[in-house]
Amino acid sequence: MIVTNVNHVPGRKILEHYGIVQGSTVRAKHVGRDIMASFKNLVGGELKGYTELLQEAREEATQRMTTQARQLGANAVINVRFATSSVAQGAAELFAYGTAVLVE
Image (tube, rainbow, N blue to C red):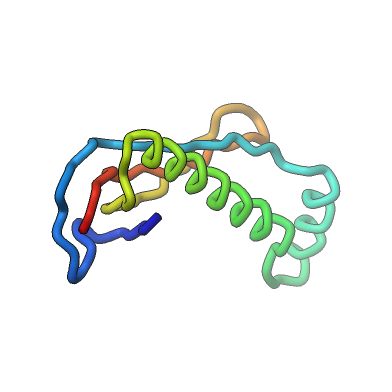
């Protein structure tokens, strides 16, 4: 499955257009990560626990989006975007969406 953030696949012609596909996941903060983050706020630096949490969420949302695209018969998802939103205290949704297409 080709996944790209541009509106075409360079060197390939779009044969079919299947429409918008999406995938999302809602993740909650972890108490252990919160404690480590509070220490990092004192001294500065990367919040690796949150970096890992967001990376896992992006991968899960992308996998769900590409699964939906495959079910439609697509072999590529173009114009991919990510969005986040807060859904509850300490929990956020990561949403991936794009256009499912069949390319040659």
